[in-house]
Image (spheres, rainbow, N blue to C red):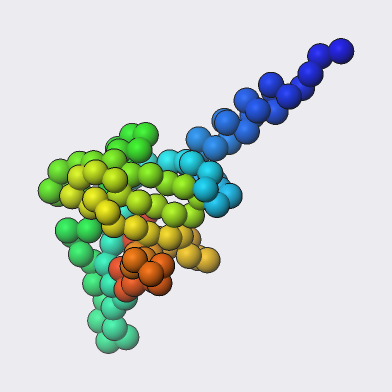
Length: 119
């Protein structure tokens, strides 16, 4: 009789590396490749988002990102995103209920900066 445990573990590791899949808190993953635009909510009489080009970034491979000011690395653990190196170092974000990445402060409260994948 053979054990199916190695197959289950292998399947689990494969799913953890797929972008766009909701991960359990603390489970490591990577963001979907592409551009992410960041900014603050706009006003009713103007644009819906006030984009901040200094915070916008692109995921270029694995756990790497690039910005207008250079590149770096990030750590995605569940719904928590922490930039670990580069121009966005020490910025922390949490995925909200509708899938936006919202910056969080040191106390864990949401800030006004929001990021989403575009195009």
